[in-house]
Image (cartoon, rainbow over all chains, first blue to last red; front, side, top):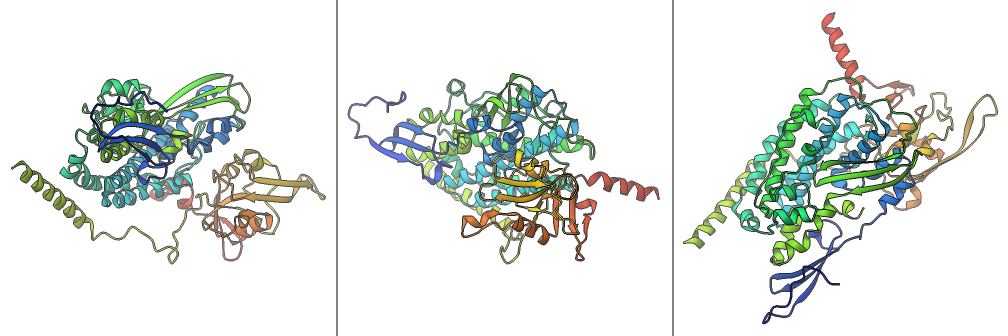
Length: 376
Length: 190
């Protein structure tokens, strides 16, 4: 297989060695295989092979009713499960013309941001595990457990709750929910300095990350990157600001952006995003009415008008979109999911070639791919 | 000189990391001693599904086939016949294949009479996959054993030691907040 980024042979260099990294490599976060050509320590070419986890989501969903599909969308990016339901639900809500009560919007936003924190914590733990640090992994999973417990109490499952629905959420929140979330935020704010001390401010980590895997603005845009990856390259693109959905227009927050585009910048952006999420949830907790409707009026049989709609949200990994084509029946005619990890993974040849082999792991963990969503 | 500075930086970084860990080392453990100490699962949590029977031993299920229709992985199989005495249908067969169930609780959402519910039981692990193919007798058994369960129509319900089915207090109900707030207001007023 020819790869456009293959470097032409340089006169006088040593023989190229081909290494298969994955699909059972523990640092590839799932089932990614990268065929890597090595010249000594330097990577001369990198060809990612994906599709080991392909489950035919889009075709299966054509044979399911709209209500049934929600539980399938959860299973794309299983680390931030709840966030994946939203683009599909927003698109169908637009087709149905359903009004969402403001309380439901705020509850959705609180859960959305909680799952962003949970997802970033998993990324931080496993990413640092790749770089050889075990302590952050133990700490982040302990903190994430608290989010999952809050979710289970209200939504009925820890990772794949199937909780959002057309017109709002499935059931009202648990009476302790707002108290629990506020308590978690207080707890989490005392823990964030630990993560800064252990990871971001540590010179050992900086030696590993600063100036490694530099991604230029132009390449990031050309490859369709999104999420923290493109924001670390100096493009302030965030769907929450670009096409606001749910309760985001009424909440104030910043988009953390950094110019360098290296591994350190991508780590930094995600750290700052966790802080912003805490701010967003605090505002939402102030605004959300304690009681009230949690679901708009939706017909018992969901049959959207014929038409097509594309809606996108900013999940922890970037721009996740759903394109829904309805022919007026109970089953959708076509569904397309635009997933951020898939686009971000296209950067592998750009970032790997020329880097050291040991840095490839750092670069990959800074891209934070989840393969349930890459392969769908 | 620069090498010395780098080594000094690294030593300082390790010391700072150890200091952070040392600060947190006295916190209580976050892990649980499962299976010696079992965690309490909220009844809304979707683990095992169960069929609930009324206090007099009759089925709550009216065999309307709603759960079979909404199931995304099509694991529910129902056979029914006309009720010999009176209107409606009665169950002949109710099979649920937990091995293929994706735990979305669409069936619980759809049930109009709160017959199929989520219970707080979670120990699914078996040696043979065929043990996960549940029939009506098994689902009824889980329902009888269950002390607390949830369905959207009736909320969280409990079985008293005498075998009576009662509604759980509002602090356990999703949506019980409105009731609690009203009670608090009433308490202040009185």
